Length: 249
Image (cartoon, rainbow, N blue to C red; front, side, top):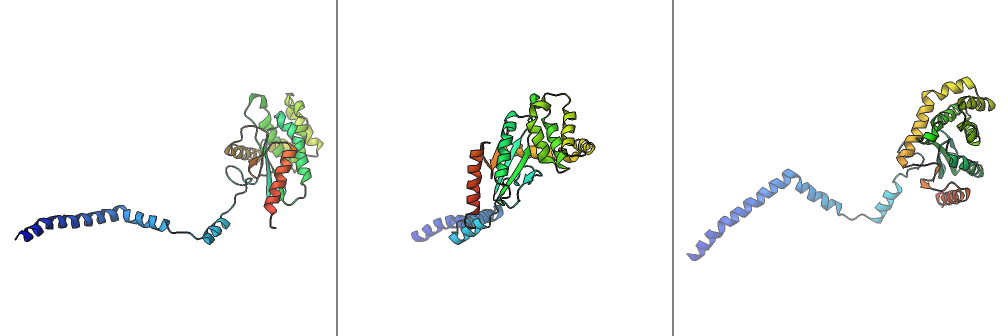
């Protein structure tokens, strides 16, 4: 009799336990906890070294000159898109340091001219400073020259004569003279300078520079890494990038 009484007293607790387990099961299904448990279980499955190697090999590598943010490859480019090293310069035409760096960049381009592993991209980055009040227009002017295939020649004239046109109220007429001296259609140059194409190109470069965190000029990147604008540092960085990019070829 005593044993039956003990069974009777335990029975309600057993029933309550069964009911609770059933309720928890229903809630788990309703809230996705079961799914979360299955997801965790699947995530803890070990990955073989072969799978990891496959994944790494198939992960696309972004080219620093064509990756977001901002513009893609860039209009003012020397060298093939397949090059293993890209030098990307951000400059302002009223920046004294950029004028000093200009011969350095010309020397760099000359040193690697014809090298299929080398590419150079120039980016406009006119600074919003009172003393650089003509720099945005200067960028527009070089883009207008570029529409006639004379970007690099006109850029060279602007940097070499920076102090002359920067201090001259008649700088626009001076630029027209530069355009004429390199065989450009001056009337077309004037029209293109005020057109939407030139503005879009300059603004795209500005957007890219801001996205990369550029705050001063000249700023130079070699495969996305900042490098001082001196010929020794640039050649060391370019040679190292070429060696790394062509290893095993």
